[in-house]
Image (cartoon, rainbow, N blue to C red; front, side):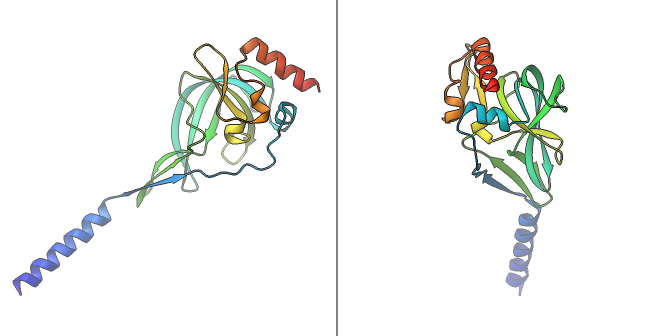
Length: 182
């Protein structure tokens, strides 16, 4: 009888310990962006705003029990304006970590790393009223970083961005302006 009571006590302790601990769930973001323009002109035309932005802050938040990372940015240069585009605005990514009552949920995109503070990015953006945030219109196919020398470095190989690779600010501006006139 003592063994039964001891076993029940151990099972009860094990179950309660398991309930208290939160399990970590990692979910890769698998997004298949459809109708991604294959030209710079198409990408420029489909975006709500096109900017060079310097990330100033990052924070994870939850929307409908899904994590997202919201990045504050300072507008460096706007190639295409939008009414919600201010000198300081926000861009979101569908990645991040949030703590829910029963688990810790992490979403990541192996093809689209998180933006980092104090870095500059070329972004083709869409505005989302639901999150009140700008989003890269077509994920990694609508964003590029600038390397240490200030040259465009796309996150992924895509026909619309490939022609921008290695351009600096002035040449980039001229190329985007020419695409906007077409």
